[in-house]
Length: 253
Image 1 (cartoon, one colour):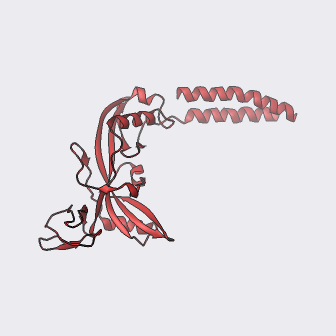
Image 2 (image 1 turned 135 degrees about the horizontal axis):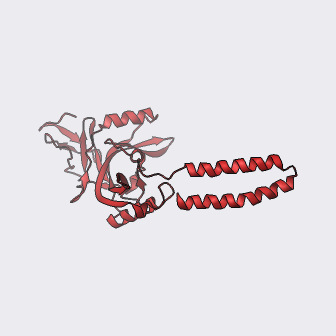
Image 3 (image 1 turned 180 degrees about the horizontal axis):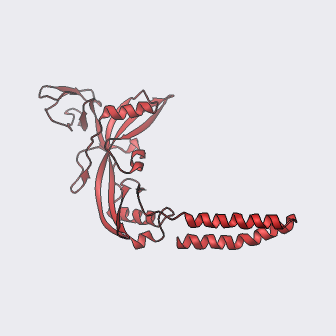
């Protein structure tokens, strides 16, 4: 859309015609008070997800993730949280009608180093008009054009789009330090889910060694013992220390 003092646009919600001031990126419809965003492809609605997770809840969500199965043992106790700051991340949201049912698709409106962010599920029913991010909240600029996002949607086989809009997703950005290395994680501000692409991962080699040991022992016992009942009895006896060893590895790694 060409932006000039005399240009006009139609509100995608009420259809009313509005004047567009040159350089204005985020107008508000003068008739229905709908918040909008101006893109080269046109004018679409501008919304946000409510921030339901406060700072303390975000910190607790991060600690739960750190104490989970993906990260090294005791990461929640051995790491030091450096910063925890609120921000909003822009996502292009598309509604499409497939086989009589409406489906919602999202594409990132800005580059992100964390792949999970591009896979966020945006609950369209909870959207609110976007007014401002709030004091102290960083707003990531929407730098990926709407046409580009629509192209990605076409590559996924979605051709019929009934509505397009820009949605600001609330996040908390955490920086923490572990063993002299700094890491970053994002906490989704509506659900508390944690996203991270690089983090101190739990070592997998000890588990593979336990599994390999079990295969070797069971294999040797299977070759040496011919009686079927005796073989099952020895297998059961061998399984006990292997299970204890696996439990010990889980506690230590």
